[in-house]
Amino acid sequence: MENPETRSVTSRELLVICVLATIAGAVIGFVGGAFRWCLHVADAWRADVLEWAHSLPGPNWLIPMAFTGLCAATAALIVGRVPLAAGSGIQHVEAVARDEAAPPPLRVVPARFIGGVLSIGSGLVLGREGPIVHMGAAIGSETARRARMDDNHVRSMHNAVAGAGLAVAFNAPVGGALFVFEEVTRDFRFRTVVPVLLSVGAGVACSRVILGNRPDFVVERIDTPSITLLPVFLVFGLLTGLLGAAYNWLIIGSLELVDAVHALPPAAKAALIGGGIGLLASLAPLAAGGGDTVSQHVLAGGALTLPLICWYVVMRFIAGPLSYAAGTPGGLFAPLLALGALWGILYARIVEAVVPAVDSSIALPMAIVGMSALFSASVRAPLTGIVLVVEMTATTSVTVPMLIASAGAVVVAHLAGVAPIYDSLRTRLLASPAPPAE
Image (cartoon, rainbow, N blue to C red; front, side, top):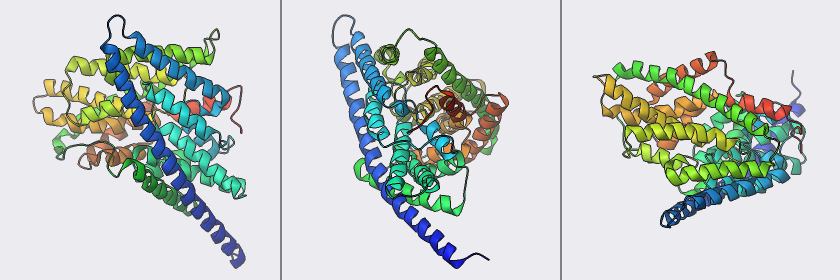
């Protein structure tokens, strides 16, 4: 029989964790909201720079090249001082959750904030979610350390506030919580669930003070696709599984290729990659950047010719892994969602041309399904991907096609023998010469 005193202590510990998780969640809500606001401002400045450069005579493409290259190099120098600020950060969050690495120190927060604004805001094809998740994890673990909690409770706080970070990144509270349960901890126990929910709720509520209370994407009302079209979505999911496996392979390959160049320091490598992305932005602005602009353009039914869609799919497929290989702060989720939306539109246009029973009304549902299916294929967290997209688009009418396509994508990606992207990145992190430690 359980000792009542032990039950009382356990309940008291849970209460303390819940209070601290709520406070830390509120902190990442304001920090993540401020980070997203800074990225909005940086995107506006980048658009102004591109417009100004295009108005100049001569080789005006040199200006965006220099702008993005300089910002990427500066972000790489910040990473040189705080190595844990490199890349997404989610792989480190998962390593900590599995007790394979120490929780991140608080200095990760300013490094990721400033470095992320420089790298993502300058046009590198990186997502905001990785830095915000890692900042949340650092804030959560530091809060627990300051409260003199033991290592298990430090990890619990680390995991809970990391989930709040993802929720803040996409204004998706349920998706942020589910991310912790499905991807980070793979644990639905009561002691895990309650702090995560409180932290996520506080984080999203506080971020909305800065960002407002609306979905990330504005999408017109979509009718539920006919059941006769489900085979079309299934085939799409199977093909998306191959695309996701190839994308994961290209990310790891790009990292290995850049690491193999020993003649250049990290800042110089980042500058060269940044210069290439800056040139791409000069030629095709929607091909660069985190992806929100192109995703909204697609989801709003913006006009894109078939050759242009193909161009954007190819360019973003290459530019995303290349940008990640620069080693600057930035994540993978947002570029995956943008690429998935473009891929969905491309598939819809092809099917519309070759299948007489399919018309143009399938394009928008396919774009939304593409976002969740490609995420699922790469990350292997299908429930998180579906819920994130539903919350970001405020659209529930295509959930059945999303389930079918995401299931097909996960199966094919698994059969292709390519590991989930964060498993691969975590393996690289733990095998690096400088192991993750405070």
